[in-house]
Image (cartoon, rainbow, N blue to C red):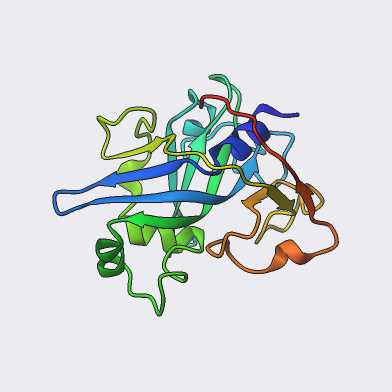
Length: 203
């Protein structure tokens, strides 16, 4: 199994912590997508290193943040060894703490709809281009990832969303049954469940 795929699954259940002068916000990662390098046609790194995607080739645990279609910032975690491209897109999170601040950052009809999408969660947490390259492995950053309290869960996977190529790869992972997961495409016949997941590895 590709290391980026393993890290993608391992990130499920971990906590994103975002500190601002006004508040501390915290949320559980419930849905992710894995992206590789030149062997992945849907990846930013499919054609090699560029000024935009160079962070994907950096060391594991660094944030890769970019503006998608000039509208939404998307938040990724760089994986793998330095020099080999790989990143995990954070697609949905479950708000845990500082929910009132998240609501101020992004108006939503319900708490469920607050962070159940990659563009929604960055706005709710105030993640933007200044976080591109931030070290997510230390609490000295104003944005980092913590282990938190872990409870048993099953993982379900499916094809990635919103891509034109690489649709056959089951590289979208989510905590089964979590209401904050985006959309309903995990019900497709190409989805499958990965049960009794207990594997843990560092970023």
